[in-house]
Image (cartoon, rainbow, N blue to C red; front, side, top):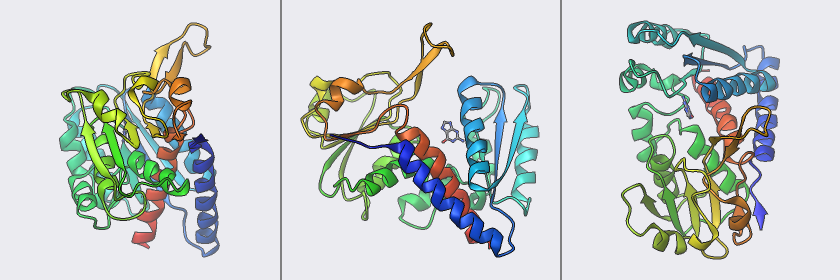
Length: 291
Ligand code: GUN
């Protein structure tokens, strides 16, 4: 059994990006610059955004965190977005999701300049991705593809079952894995909350991508031997024994599934770190396209 080590792979990627940044600097150019807008104080979002900013510093990017109050109006947020769209010193930015309920997420995502949309959430980028044109690919599915590629997991002709149809993970990974190219050419089934007889699908899967958000949902009796399992779940589960008061759980019952699998991503240390590395990669691409 191979552990698909996202922590190590993400570190390798960051080292590669760091080298490119030092070459850019030697050339007399400014560093690539990523900004993140965070509205409110959601605990998980604060952690993710903090991690993104730290990773920027590590590779030598400039980073800006725009932390707005929970009560910020949609109008003020839109103004900020227009400002970032016009900022020539900024290559890319993200608006951390979820947004507070009084803000229309769709309206916000549509306002982002697709050239700076390093999350790949704008319909222009999503559409271009689906059409196999140059596009920013959402960081989590992009990270999964990179992990499959670097570990040379055979996907051609394999049956991949994606569980979850979110716009951020399930839907884009199902598109990417069915496309031509590396980590592609798979026969993909997208399962979701309305799917009937899910176990008959998972039992016949060569690759399973779990992007459901239900801790330890996938169990050993739902899979065949030799499957590759990608766990995108990162749910905080209360745990009094832990100093933080919670632990992070994936969508996979790791020990029992790992015992039967050929390859598996751990949680933490699997897909999570890859997401951040690929956001950096998208920012570098945005910088290179501009310059
Ligand atoms: N919330 C959860 N994942 C993501 C992500 O990849 N990007 C943004 N902007 N928000 C998120």
